[in-house]
Image 1 (cartoon, one colour):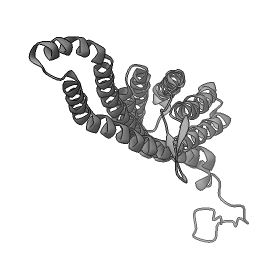
Image 2 (cartoon, rainbow, N blue to C red):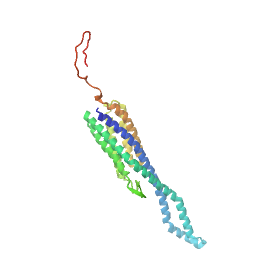
Image 3 (cartoon, one colour):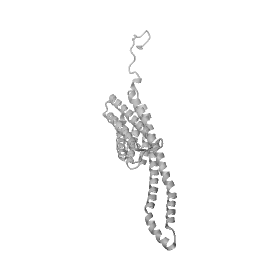
Image 4 (cartoon, rainbow, N blue to C red):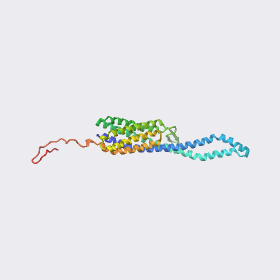
Length: 292
């Protein structure tokens, strides 16, 4: 195989390994953000409900004032004060956690997208170069899905988690990644593309196991790629599945690195014919022809 096949595959696998690690960090942060946002919303809703119910509270407390001489205004103030003391720290904590997680997501997300794009493109270049050597059409399909699945999926996930608006705090612009809402349409499309990409990779490796120098490792990588695609598809249902899926992707590309190094040998490194040079006939007592 040419240098392009070997080092394209290896570079793509290394980039994919790093992208998988960054993907785990990204979606772990996204999950933490979701939890903190839920806490803030729940306790904020409780506080809002308590405020809405104050007219009803007035109706309940008014007879107490008339019968027992209890001042309903003082009771109402104490009630609101207790609600603020109870819920405000939780609401504020959830809100500031959301800001912190949004900052983390906004800083990690571009690196994740770049690494996914690089991995998909390099792997595709490797498959296209391999096709030029063996004319196996499956390599063309794998190259196309390397770009569409890995690169396309990574870009869509970036767009899904891209900051929607910024909060201006003095001279500091803080990106609030989910001020409006996360784009779940992009997340779902990305999960489908990643499924397709890894499935095609898996089918390619399983079909090529008979020609492989390491058939057992080739089968293992193919199975891991299919499993990775299925788990990443589960990201449609839960963010946790993305974390598990990128962990599976990490294992897949870690296995791919030694496989690619041994499988895609550089044939040009060993000359097939002896270099040209003058040949001499056998000398006296020598039973063989000598060449350069």
